[in-house]
Length: 205
Image 1 (tube, rainbow, N blue to C red):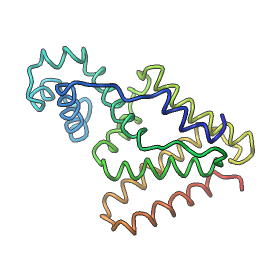
Image 2 (image 1 turned 180 degrees about the vertical axis):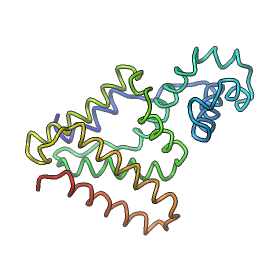
Image 3 (image 1 turned 30 degrees about the horizontal axis):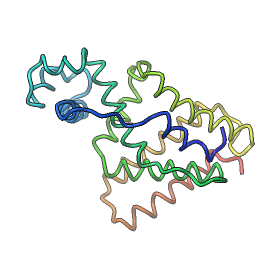
Image 4 (image 1 turned 45 degrees about the vertical axis):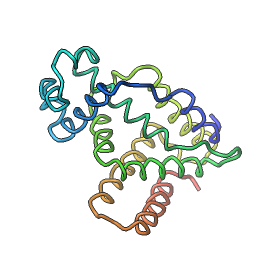
């Protein structure tokens, strides 16, 4: 997959769906509780109480807690995806990766709780429950890395490992920056420097 087509692809495959105010209340409550108490430590009754609704109302929208967890991930991932603007024709792999990395990190710093939930979800068994559209999104990212390896722009390593390195670096940098309370100028500098650091790790040049 050509680098310049990646952001176009994910914006086409994944589009924000409309949700009701009641669903938004449920998702907001679930986000707060899951991040603070974990998936297993948060019963649906606590989510309903936090959202100010009856248990039956929650189950009207989400049949199980597993379904709610996956729905919340998709909802947050769509919000994150919206911050990635379409790349200009002819963008290099490095330019595309920098855009994705920078946009994701800035979004994460502005949405700390949601960013922590994404990390929590990605290290859980719920990843296997994602629907096909979200799997296509992940597949598009893997194809981008595979293409970079094939073109010898990235180190000849397993694309799954490269993806793990990039995501771990992204989440780790986000955690550090969030805790450090940096100024806007310092944030920009660290984002630029941290991308160059990880790019040196994975680039073949």
